[in-house]
Length: 134
Length: 134
Image 1 (spheres, helix red, strand yellow):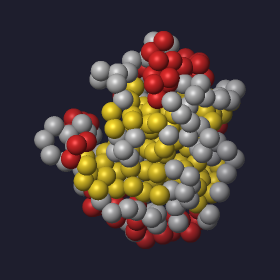
Image 2 (tube, rainbow over the protein chains, first blue to last red):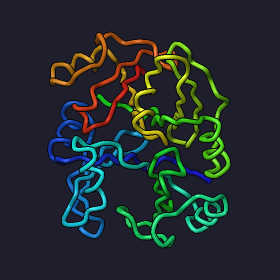
Image 3 (cartoon, chains in turn green, cyan):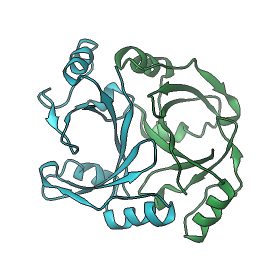
Image 4 (tube, chains in turn purple, brown):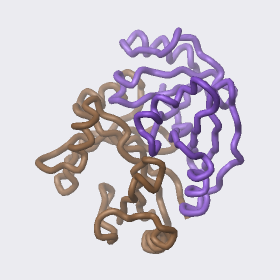
């Protein structure tokens, strides 16, 4: 069921500084920042060849990463995103296995414009897991 | 400089349970557990196609992930590992840029038998970064 790792998301308090670190210190190609007000974040994509690192900075009030950054002021790994062929089939299989799907269980359009779901970290060794329709 | 994402490492309190979750609930191929006493961990590799997830359980006294699990009893994302062509050149570039290399700065043989270094999380948005010679 589980497809490739689409991205690792890292919440950062200062997107410009984090972008400079990945671009200049680590020498990785980085995108321009993209404001996604409907998701409450500004994102920069770091191309690491086989997958992406997404640097996320809070945008606006009630950002979904604000509480995480309050607990982790330097930033930190926020979630991992895996691709799945059929997100509704994946959801139903996960629910049948007892895993908790966050929110109302209906896929929303994610940062890439594709349907996504988030799974409860407590069901996955403390790791917030995003599934994205591939 | 930065090459592909070799793996995302997740520290887990119960390796058998975490392995079952990835294998049965998420439907991913998983390896047999490998005890690495010289690294203080037992590891299971999860194949996600384009990269690996490494599930790490403490092994023996003084495991390098024991403190992390004491702070995060359910487990959590512990580090990310990127491949580099030349680990000594990478180290020297990073040090010149002001990044802190953990330990004595000399590469050690990692879980895959290749030279690795770890970089200070405070220099990378709260993320522990491993570099592995590819």
